[in-house]
Image (cartoon, rainbow, N blue to C red):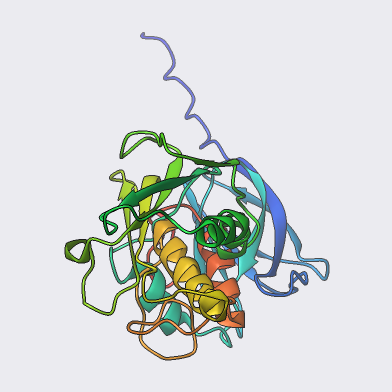
Length: 281
């Protein structure tokens, strides 16, 4: 008579615990359904939950008045933010996913290098000192504002020996009057960002053509152009509409709007490559 068959192994389970809050206000959310690995539970009054799940790599969170979120489980505890349906997700998809199926973002704070060499300037021309001072002062603020404070400028360097194009971890800002570099005759700026296949931005270059924006009275316009182009460098695309910094056409917004700030905070609170509406890869 042969040996007894091995006992059937019980399917292992994992314990997932965390808190669910409102993406905009940070207020804990009660009664949110949390599901993973075929099991589900609901959050309590303080937004906290405990779930015993049989495996799985993602957790789904849903509740009345909020967009469903599918979040990647980097660990088995965390703080999960849900986006209220009052937020314009269609506009967010336009500005954050129009250039790619998923979102693009930096994972670490970039260094900023302001190149003071005059590119394609008239003979003997030099970059005005007030342009350089303004860009160096504002760039760190825009990096922080566009990322919801998730990132900051790791350093700001002003000089004439910038790192080579594509240097990882660096945004290079330069002053370039070569019209061929720009998409139209009226364009005062352009930006390109290099990213990997997962949607992680690794480097960026911003070019500014400020010859039509001279003098102290044009300082607000220069600020608007810089903010717009740094938005591109940080992962945002053009969008429709005339009330946000990333709108297509003439840039008129020197300060980020409430939507801009909310969109940047959402973008930088999710993994790169997040798909519509709120699904992490």
